[in-house]
Image (cartoon, rainbow, N blue to C red; front, side):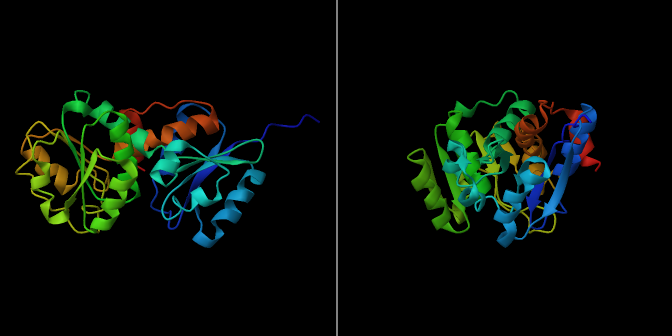
Length: 279
C-alpha cells in the first residue's frame, strides 16, 4: 500500500483567539491556489504554550502564527530565532523544521512596510522624521522597520515614558522620546505618523492626538483595523493627509509564513482584503 503524503497543517495560537482573522485569510489563500492544507485557530493558555509547540509537529503541523499574549514568551521556547525577532523582542511566525527544531521569526515589520508601499506608493521614508505613538511590541517592530528603510529620525511618545525609553536604548540615536502630552507638537515637520496603540479600536477609547502641527503631505497610518477606518484616520483624511489602514499589515505579515508552510507565495490584493473583511 502506497503511503499518502501528510496534509500540511498550520494555525494561530493565542489566548483568546476567536477574534483572529488569520483563519479566514489563510483559508482563502488555500482555496484560491487549490492547495491541500488546513489553518486552525487554537486557544492556548500561557502555561501550555511550550507543551503545545513541542507537540504540534508530531500532529502534522508545519508551522503556526503566534499572537497575544505569546509573542514574547515564544522567544524563550524557540530553538532558532532570527535576528529581527531577537531585536524586536517578540516573534509571530513559527516554522517547524524537519529536524524538530522550532524556528521563530517576526514578520510584523516587513508587513508594515509592505502595506505602506502598496497603498501609498509615493511614500518616501527618507523625507522626514516619523512619529510613532505607543511603545508596545508592535511599536518595536515598526521602529525596527522604519530604521531599516532609512527614516532619519523616529520620535516616540507613550503613555508610560519608561517603555519608550527602553526602545530608545535598544534602537539607538535615531530614536527620541517625547512626553505623551506633547504627542501633538511632536508631529511638527514629520513625514510619517503611526498609531501602534489599541486606542481607537472597537471597544477601546478614542485616540485623541491633535494633528494641527502635522504637515498636510505627511502619511498617517493606524495599525488598528477594527474599525477599518479609525477616527484618527478619518480626521487625518479630512484635513488632506494621505492615510493607510491597518488591514494590509495583517495581510502582508502573513504571506511569508504561508509561503514557507504551503509552498506558494500568496498575492495580497483587493480580493484578499475583501475575503478577510467579509469573513
